[in-house]
Image 1 (spheres, rainbow, N blue to C red):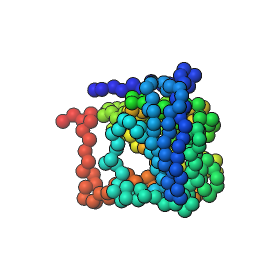
Image 2 (image 1 turned 45 degrees about the vertical axis):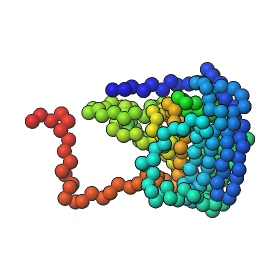
Image 3 (image 1 turned 90 degrees about the vertical axis):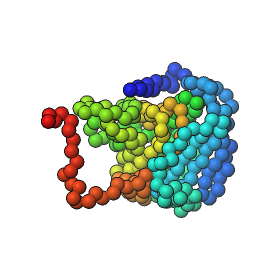
Image 4 (image 1 turned 120 degrees about the vertical axis):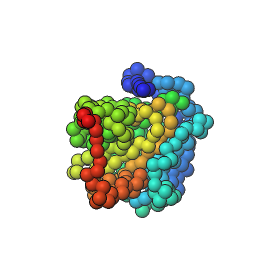
Length: 275
């Protein structure tokens, strides 16, 4: 069994590389480069040039992708449904439920069009943990509420809403009697945040790398052992409903088949059973 350890990096213990943004905006996509100009991240060398693309694939689904121009990385290609992938050309931002901007300091800001509420914000002034992008370490942070109510990031045995603060590494385990807070069979790097007024939105970090998620001090941070940033935001419709977030998520990754009635009751588990 291979054990992966992700080191928790504190902002006070290291600096971050500074990038400048070069972008092109159209009605339906923001695309460009983050070019390194100074500094070093926690695990140098950092990527010198990052390509990014932000596109509203549907009215309620936003896709953000950041890749290293010099170092190709493995992409998860067998999760997104073909029908969903075909919608990747996108809709005009003005026709979507999102307001999106990419700032000069390489922050990505996403707001809900109906209310103006910011639901995703990676600007250096909004988060303590900066963007880090190297061959063996990738990090991205977004601002959340002071005491956020967040669900998801399975599979593990815990209470429904995540505790706060929260620090968890997603790795799959096949354990017969898992304890509280431990991993189960699958990894589902999707979280859903409930904001004031009950509006909800979801974020999926699609990665094949070991992933650590930390929620503390008003921000959520993803840390990966390499790879790329491939991120989806689900708006939950204009009203931000949980049911809509789930519908948008399963539209992307696929929905389970309805099993035939004659198979019900045939699933057997022999863990702990003496024969």
